Image 1 (cartoon, rainbow, N blue to C red):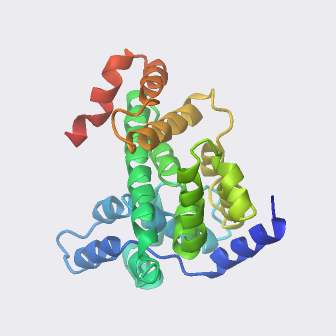
Image 2 (cartoon, rainbow, N blue to C red):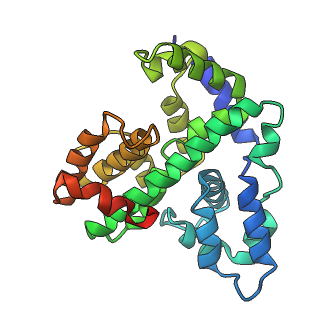
Image 3 (cartoon, rainbow, N blue to C red):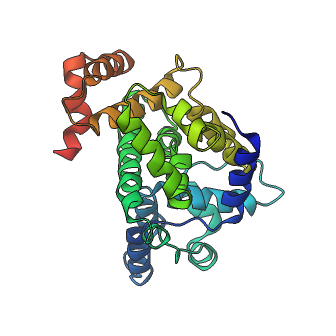
Length: 271
């Protein structure tokens, strides 16, 4: 059953909480900071791009500290770093809180969270490749939208591991259960309902909201994100997943290429 009070509680709690990052992200950024020769906006962007939690942490900080004169929305990580500056980035955005430490008392929740992070990164890479192939000049916006599509799920794995483990157990016991139904039964609300509230409250860019909304799926940019996420989600179950042929067909239509060429095109860099 939908629980608005439960949703309100979690929106407030996550908004007031320091967001954790992957320990590997902190380690790599700390190493970069000590290396003057290798330190650049591009090198920092490459690290942040692999961590959805770090990405949303940066965008959230920039939105909450933007100047009154700023009229354009910032979606690209590189653009955010250029506006903020390298030293202010390191001085003002805390990296000490790690996902691994937050879940130290709930070790069983860490692997599922890392799988979502990995899946989201793969989706972002697929979305990026598709956007470049389709000559989308704002391909980085597409990549970020795919990367952050499941950010509410990641946050709840960090801050509500017991509830998320219960959801996982219920779905494994009965694979016919819809995700939204199980989420509402355990949490009182759906994860996408939470994500929408957080994105609006945190002032994340409107285009990002649109791309994450799972609406207007017939439009090219939204369809790009959706199909990239589907491929990453289904392939995470193994490359023999029954849903993959439909993914190849749909992506082939989007990319204007035969379905049997889609997998090689999107996974060439993984091999």
